[in-house]
Image (cartoon, rainbow, N blue to C red; front, top):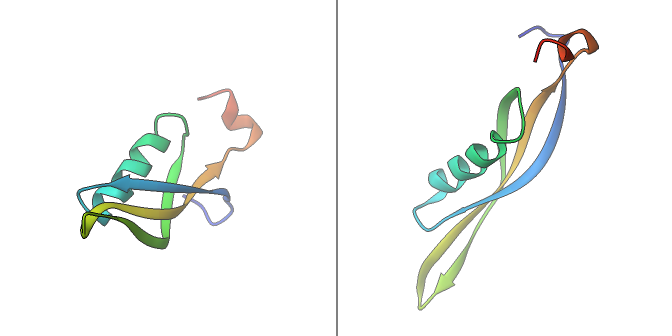
Amino acid sequence: MTSENTYKVIELVGTSPDGVTKAIENAISRASQTLQHLDWFEVKEIRGYIQDGQVGWYQVKLGLGFRVLDPEELSRD
């Protein structure tokens, strides 16, 4: 990775009944199915859904950064 890279940042919300870490992993796993060159993430919000007086679901809003390719890199991928 060089210092001259350009990144695109998108927002995603990952969810899981199994905790914040799993919600983050779910969002990144799903994004990696359709995006390339994922490099980093930033947790922006953590919230949850209460069901019957207990935590039902965790929700984590992420900023997900991926590298914008140079034109000459497009033909290699």
